[in-house]
Image (cartoon, rainbow, N blue to C red; front, side, top):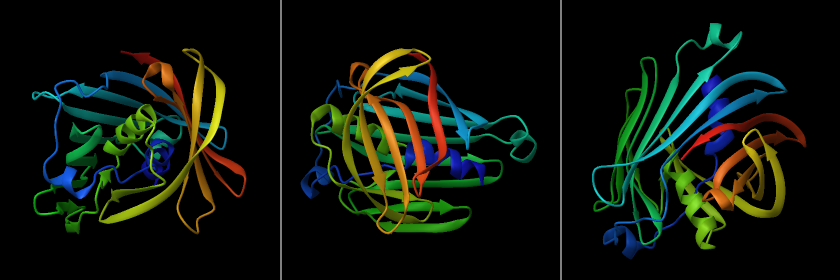
Length: 242
């Protein structure tokens, strides 16, 4: 599915940000230390342009609360097969310098995944393509969108863990990752010093590498997924609006 391929470009990093105490009684600051933005990316699959994606982070109505939206569109000949856009949204708060997701929604045509985080009860409940979801939350569990902000905050605060957990459809999956150093990256919006982070699941030969720009609040500038050392997929920034 094209949506799964595109999502792999920026979503496959996750992590346990909260202790149990933080999950029960978080401190939500008025200024969470992250700035709203709107970024546009192009997606390439085996050097073929297959789509575009747009990320938008906005403040919600309460202080310290945010809405993060991702719209993915196929393009070219892929548009004939995948005619409907994919949209994903996460509603979350930032508490004690970590992301605390509250609700997640993903849609493509009539297909929908939606669930709420009940931190008091320690469960995530909702539906994945009409199948009921009731998952026991691990400390710091994220959704496919909120995890991006958690990684950005982890890099900014210098406390990125080695293992992350995210809800993907009807499962909680764990990922291992590591910082691989730094690199100067030339992009369509300029040249930036970046930090490289790799992510992989245990026993899986697929590796995701992402380039984050410290000068832009650790915004993701580029992502590449490889398998067996061969590049499969890339996503590269094309424009940015603060």
